[in-house]
Length: 263
Length: 278
Image 1 (cartoon, each protein chain N blue to C red):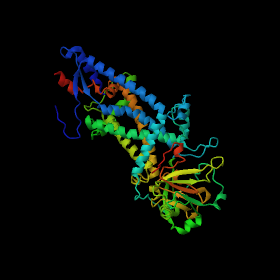
Image 2: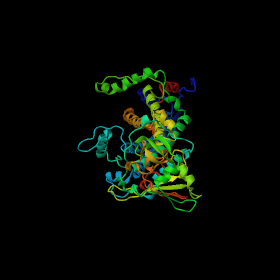
Image 3: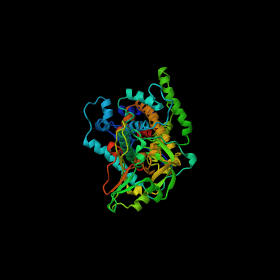
Image 4: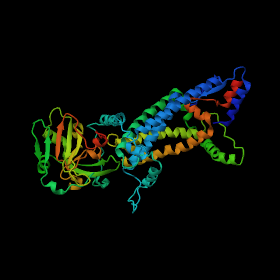
């Protein structure tokens, strides 16, 4: 993430190191974390597609029926648009197919969650995700940096990246910590509405069967809200960051460590 | 090097030196593997989409295959097994007060039957230990068995639900009075008066495991909200099984058949689950 580190590669390649030109690489993501990260893409895609189709069987948000189409569902207004513009979507009236796909993806999602937790524990990455007290002040600084960055570029002004010496910055920690939490809540609310009789205590935690359905529906938007900036920032940040999620290591090692190495 | 202060402190990353050529080689290998995986997932995931969605995408060819059906049905079966493992005969479903009752719509899938059938209505029991085929009218049922009331939630596979006040006899009491064959594990509950969309007869049949039939809250209902059942809600006798989805709560039951083998199920034949435990 830190932009100053691209300079240290140059240092290495311009011969700071004797004889063989070696690069210093740091382990960034455990194999299981990488696998579960990428497996989440098709699984969440399947869950969202089939989930919206299931929602349309009994929409929660309704308005007065449209006199010409008879439609009364707020999401169907959006849904009709999506179905006509995004042909890959599962439309309404396909409940049986949508349910089968949803169960398949839901069980895979839970198994994948275990892979992810395994990777975090084995790779020792879980500590990096924990929010810290200082994040309350550091997160707004990062937010200001991200928002201001494109404007600073436009007017060719220097825009300094806030300094930090942890794996993730405060805003990344907030995002990468809340998404697994949302995953757990999605699974919990999913079970609550899937088995509202045998697990009625679980539905009661979320305020009953109907409320748990609403929770489950809105949790879906957390993933969509997360994915948009996540994609933009990965591409803005460059190849090293994307590669680290595929290959596992990064050539960006923190500045203090580089100095120690060079000595 | 500074040691981590606590269990929760971030660990410093592992660092290794690597020749740039090696780095290049490893990157190329992993990125190529990743690309192959992504293409395979895209193809495999697309293949799993319902035919209807694929046709909308412009795929003319029939992409249905036994393998695809097997995989998707396997997910349904696993989910059914989980539901069966979760079921407990001792666990009661939550009950509500009269002030919590919500409206319940007439959810006949096709046309609502003409009430003419009610006058000659009989419940037939088959697959009994006695080897006989028993016919009971509504008076037999309401006078011979004790009536039970309950206010429970009925949950539809579509996601909506309704809290309603029901009264009827326990299925368990009927099973005790007319015991099924000893090997019986299943009941086929059917309604011959069911109609399709255009009003033509279309029998509705549903499989119910006897463990669920014996649940104390599984009723053969005669009254809804304090009144005898109307045609909308399956007069004169319907099944109320709150531990199952609404589609198992057969209206206007005409016949119950006990068997050792799992009987056919109307909605399972249309791609839904068979067990439907909730």
